[in-house]
Image 1: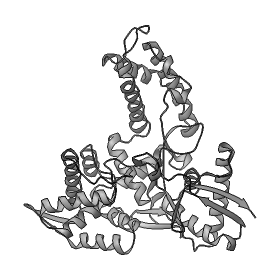
Image 2 (image 1 turned 120 degrees about the vertical axis):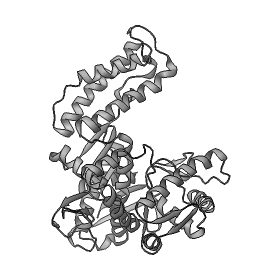
Image 3 (image 1 turned 30 degrees about the vertical axis):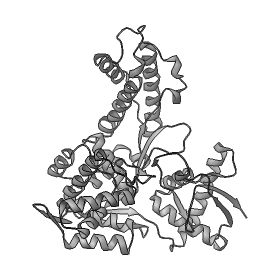
Image 4 (image 1 turned 180 degrees about the horizontal axis):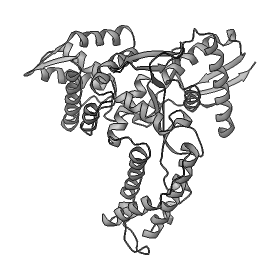
Length: 427
């Protein structure tokens, strides 16, 4: 990434939309009407229909009656998508009229005739031409942790995760003790996952001082803190350490918001994986790792070229093909091993399929959509595979059968049905 692109990336508005599917909603709204206000009305309808939230999670409910307050928020999202679509020459805007370009029409065709994945990857070329944000992400990962193939960790430990009960936290000194225990845990995580020895005493002192200066924590350790400020204090501490990991440890120059925006977009494309749900009982927080490489020449047939940069290096994502005879056998082997590891902890025959997917994706460094495709093939062809296994897939409660409002993890569709628990036997 050149200095100009880095500056543009850094200076982007702090709040940006996550879902690349929003581009399709905008383009279809323009098909409906070239009038900006009527296009916005259509955008709101499609937003509800596609259950796209304003965060990085999809909504599980459809609001039939959109309040004026919600429309103000939706207008902001609409304008953000419109502004970025203009940058990529997907639409042309003049006064209150908006029209599709040939590239915008092609994007619609790819979404409707091919797939959302192909649509997202089509958009990547416009994004990289403007920002090279994906390249910056991938290279930052490998530079930060070459020993473990670009793995980045962002630990998040609440007092409860560190075996500290909420009702024991009453005085300023109690919270200062929590931050001391947290600091020690972060030191161990950095050594374990990044192979670095760090002394975080000074950073922890900076955090405590910032909390006292903001009058969130009393300076006297024996004084009681305001319980209403408890969540704010924890959030300040979490954000402080997330920023330290991103900008100090990993030398990523943009903000945490910018990183999140592009990292979750990169996940949709298949460039990297980011998750807050990696099933490791010894770690809690966010895990990020690349699923792609930036090199001059293709390594093997499991890598798919997405973009060529001005210096002639290319972005390849790891997108194995089921047709490659080695891939099904390796997938089944890793799938079974992941199942056994999750089962050992869960102590149950049926285990969480999404947790199994997390382990398989990490081991094979594949996008979630490749896992879903391979599992579907395996399930429907299991008797024909060289490794004889029997896969049982069932449905526990699906998210829309619960009281949750947002889909925090993408479900797995196998044989035309959503599944979320799995059991595997060797025949």
